[in-house]
Length: 375
Image 1 (cartoon, rainbow, N blue to C red):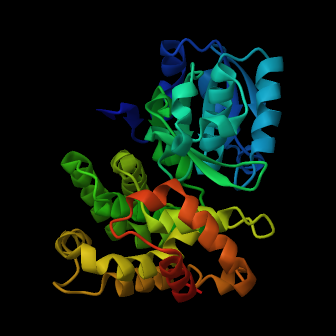
Image 2 (cartoon, helix red, strand yellow):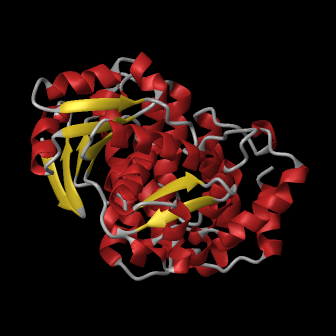
């Protein structure tokens, strides 16, 4: 089993869930708040985790995490956390559960409302403390188990990214066994989320060569093994490699992200659709790669190398072909986005934290162009 020490401690391999009790003890957690969703309860994964705890740790399970976590759900979860006398969080699931768990930990330590911690307004300075979090991913996409951030839809409709080193979980338990039952569609969507993280983090202009090396390694793994994981969900090698791609994607986006995430966050806030973040990333990525090409010629050479493409290959076209191969939607219209949604997408994308680190600054007109190309 690999133990990775990079931003946090990550136990990585089949069977890693056995390390959970020790990490809870290391974090000083005596009653764990398990932030998860109803689907994982039904799938038996919550029972797998609670069985791993044995009698060593008390716990309370919150399974109300929505597909795109909301401030309302965070408040509901925090009330349960407080009433049950919990002193730390086990964030179990995909990005939604891990993000909700981080938000609960923030409010448990520093109080609300969430909006006061807006990093664009200097809100990180208001953080007093954060309850300890142990993250246990059950998908291979978001990488939130090792990241500095989380994303919540606020009550005012904004989908806000919160970022601080204090949000990095105390430990991550990355057990590919927990992803073996993931359906093909979700494997494809979360896999493209991880690949997008690697690509966008690598392309940001912020200087961090070690993070770029991690991004390229993650991209190589994801690009090689995603089709195999989608084709055969019981392929243990593919599942291991995709979870590593996911973890490395999040380790690398310490550099920041870009316009893909700005638009995905903007579209993810449309409540009537409740769109999956990874699928949105996959659909927006080709248009953003075309937009950024003039600023990224050297880096595109290295992306092609990591992806095993021919020199001069069209990166946007390669992503489009991958999306088609693994069964993702061909565009935003197929996901329910309408022309009337475009003005709101532009507004919220312009305000998103990720827009600030895109390698080529994007105007309102640029965002409209990229959105329409993605329809």
